[in-house]
Image (cartoon, rainbow, N blue to C red; front, side, top):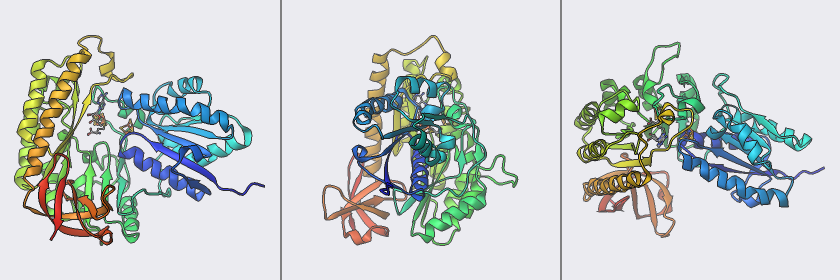
Amino acid sequence: METRMMKYYIETWGCQMNEEDSEKISGILKINNYEPTDNEKDADVIIYNTCCVRENAEQKVYGHLGRLKNQKKENPDLIIAVTGCMTQQKDAAEKMIKKFRHVDIITGSFNSYKLPEYISRVKHSGETVVEVWDKEKGIVEGLPVDRKNDMKAFVTIMYGCDNFCSYCIVPYVRGRERSREPEDIVKEIESLIAQGYKEVTLLGQNVNSYGIGLERKMNFSDLLKIVNSIEGIERVRFMTSHPKDITEELIQTMNECDKVCEHIHMALQSGSNRMLDKMNRKYTREHYINLTKRIKEVMPQVAISTDIIVGYPGETEEDFNETLALAEEVKFDAAFTFLYSPREGTPAAKLETDFIDEETKHRRFSKLLNSINQIVETKNKEYEGKIVDVLVESASKNDDSKISGRTRTFKLVTFEGSKDLIGQIVNVKIVEAKPYSLVGELV
Ligand code: SAH
Ligand code: SF4
Ligand code: F3S
């Protein structure tokens, strides 16, 4: 009888939620006697954890799946599994299995923890398994998690999204909003701290609506206070925040809780009220600007980052200029910019008019990117000469004598230092600001 452990390889696309799901898939495979490998060619089981938030995310997966055809030919015992958001879309699994006959398992985000069972089924019967649950059957607690990083961890506090922004597929593939019980969150974080973790990032598509639906009356600020007081925790981050749900209570809580870092990611999407309305975002540019002012008033060192979509149907030059102007005014510390990508099943994809031509979209995109780059560089310059706390995370890939880590405001800092400092929080003086990172020296 064969006793060799089967090797698995996981490739993950998409957001931190997917990364965390992959860590759970890895955890559950490990306790079922599978062994991880970093080499796809060497794997007995290949798992793709997919994203469908934009078309290019899906294209990448298709490209990879296509290339696996040969590997499967050479090794017919290879088991190929696809999971994640892509397969959760309507009819996606059926289409995928027709197009990629070499795929053995198609499952979704809600039941990917059952992968060991599905793999066994394929191994023993050779059948193809297509099992995608269209919704959650309660939150599954207590799954083993095989984390990539041994210093900072993602902790999901809520699943799904109820906001239905008109362009976005996430609510359709991730289901309705539901919050984890605070005890389960605390238990997980306590166990992380016991293992030596220093930092947790609380995850949710909109962490600010945490608590809705729980029997006990509690909100995200209450949760932050509880997490902040966990013995041994060094840093607490969270993402992401919907601008419509950021309250004065949250701003005060961030400020009061010493472990909660001064960084907030709040997606803007557009600086034009007309566009925000069409996108179903439920706030105005004025509200957004006032919020950022208030946050900076309470926490002058705060870093604000954002997401922006360019080329939503109907976006005029004037609308776009309002986005540019807002970015100039708020002076983001980081901004992720995206070209609008129609997603089947969303209200925006049903709009039949006013699509922005590719050339205009790309022109606006580069203009925004240039402007953001300049803003970020100027913001980084403000750090020159300052002394900051850095949680040392890793040795530099290019230079053996250097180590790097992040400030509380999530800026990447590289400096000379010993690898022994990895995992510690050290004081670093910033000597030079680069466009996307800071150079410092230990003090
Ligand atoms: N829940 C998070 C966003 C998750 S999706 C939030 O609201 O902050 C990450 C980002 O992808 C979004 O903020 C948006 O900027 C972008 N995005 C979502 N759908 C998109 C689409 N159809 N086309 C282009 N960008 C999109
Ligand atoms: Fe998508 Fe909007 Fe939900 Fe964010 S808040 S996941 S953009 S629907
Ligand atoms: Fe993508 Fe799913 Fe996240 S669509 S962005 S992986 S929630």
